[in-house]
Image 1 (tube, rainbow, N blue to C red):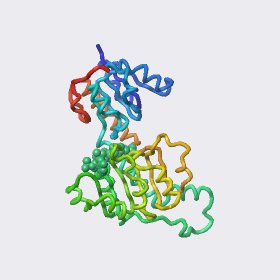
Image 2 (tube, rainbow, N blue to C red):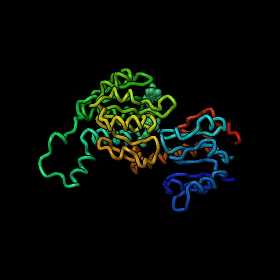
Image 3 (tube, rainbow, N blue to C red):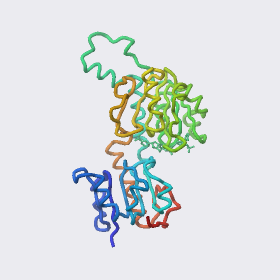
Image 4 (tube, helix red, strand yellow):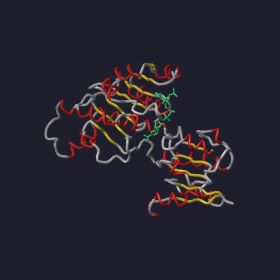
Length: 328
Ligand code: NAP
């Protein structure tokens, strides 16, 4: 009997085609109607799921009697209930590494956009306001030579720090759980307490996974330490920052600006952030380039096929589940 693969978000068809003889492949698509209904109807037969941006916990997976593996097209895996998957013996994989540089590019775009007020002044120019030479009310702040503070100097944090150090001559501070002697040497990065990082950095980037520990890592007190000259950049996960406290700090200008890719609730709608000139908001586009999304899909497909073929997937997050699938 062929195993069934359910692709619940974009995987290029050309990538799946070589496997149609070996697997039954169900590809969900908005053109086929309601996505939730498509998911629910295909799930009971699925042995493998591949996709991203769908919260999958106990309630959503109750009917997935045959499920062996979920291959997430993402690095973050906060959309999944890992302990529930463990209890069912369902493997979970992610796609680290292939998006480090693209996500770091976006973080840097947000650093430059907030510092030099690019979206605000773009709108101002297009509104026909440029009638004489601009004055200091339109000035931004420098990026080169400033201090970049990375909370969580992991893979993406390192790629951001490299841009800062070698592209813009920035001083790099970092805080986190473990010291990184290699990066201290290569980037001159200094390991400091989170308080010191917040107080001394011109740009603060948390680049941590969303966990119980990192939820609201940046709240009112932390924003106060960043201070009126500081800029917060968030490309990690929305709930890492207390969004209400951030909005208040931006409204009261107790921090200079924020560049945001991620939000507490996504898609972001009717937010006070939309009214704030010192907030640069983009719609969770950290990895959103064709090259990178294709590379993520390829890696996720490799993980999925390895799991379905009884091999250890490259990016297995819960190795203890291998071969121990239990029925729902
Ligand atoms: P990573 O390599 O695992 O790095 C995460 C870093 O966070 C590590 O340095 C880790 O410290 C640190 N950390 C973990 N818990 C911490 C805590 N409680 N306090 C301080 N530091 C902590 O992960 P990555 O690949 O860089 O990705 C990071 C996150 O970015 C992902 O989990 C994902 O949510 C997000 N992301 C977003 C986008 C986007 O589209 N915007 C794209 C990709 C990823 P240790 O090194 O000491 O373990």
